[in-house]
Length: 499
Image (cartoon, rainbow, N blue to C red; front, top):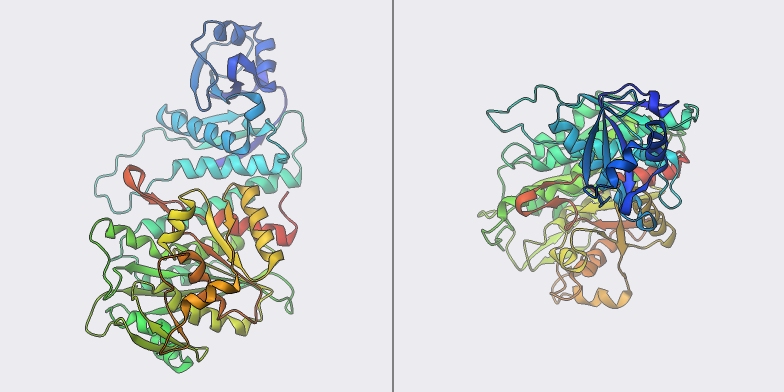
């Protein structure tokens, strides 16, 4: 998909389709009003018929508009002007993209980025237009034997900026949007692949492929023997029940000064989770291929970082394994020793994500991180608490958590902070080891983070629980690519490049 900045006189834009917004009750946006005047009031005349109310994402083609160079005009509803937001604009953009793809338009020009939403900048709105368009066009078809190719798919989108000059910042908006969209697509594709294809070895191969694209990215994959020598007893206890060997994927991107401390992203890479001996119910178990979405998001964020050549040092660490029942698998009551030397009583083998993450977090200490963020589809409790709209956020550094919350709001990939109080730690008490791997039914998301906090005391750390946001279920089943936008926004903010 190609995106181009367009400027000048709107009525003179030659395109297959020109997109303008209309608010509720016929309230024309500025671009729509400009075209209405140029056409002698043709848009207003149409709206007076009452067929188009301006509901969010309502769509209507108009043809042969006088004094306008476009072949056809597409009106898109924006809802009440006072309620118009970035989210409403994304919804309208998605609806426009779907219709254009189905109507064989090939190319179009949209004016939606010109519409102000709160305090958002033109940079942000242009970037949103790119990422939303690409997200809407995403289709997972790698495993289908008969894919019908569209004869005239949407190939080019012009982003209209009025009479403004095409500045470097606005060009960056398109570049950054494409990079983020590429990272999201990578994460979605990895998530949607089945567990028999996307194994720990496959994830490692994708990391190596990414490493070949940039001289600034070094990729190392630790095998089980190396992990054993490092004392990663928690991580390796999970992989014992699988025939697929575990991998610890380490990606080091050097974009900043040689002595600058890196940001470290640690992503849970459980490529399939049957629960182990504490086996999950059969219903919807197929969705446990998405248990590696934390790792996929680290790969996606790293790919975006490489594409933008961000001036930052970034490390991605992905502990990857399967969790299956077997004679070698963890048993409830087993005690394992983590890389940190702390012992863990495994009361529930289905709480395996924290076991592979804790060793990866300890390993990450060697990078002396400026900040460390782990991303994991960790707890069903987070789905109950926050649903599919926000990722859970906990951490031990107020500034870091605030940065992540702010980044989420800015890009529409929001998180919500939960408490990490000392009072919750006692739920992990064990009579036989330093800690248990579960803390009971109450406050499950918090006690999972409490567990991880015991391995991050020397670092500024935050934890994102994406169990509710990483994929959709039901008829819309599929990976979302979240929280790649949040992570990249966070990195852009740290580099001072977010518009």
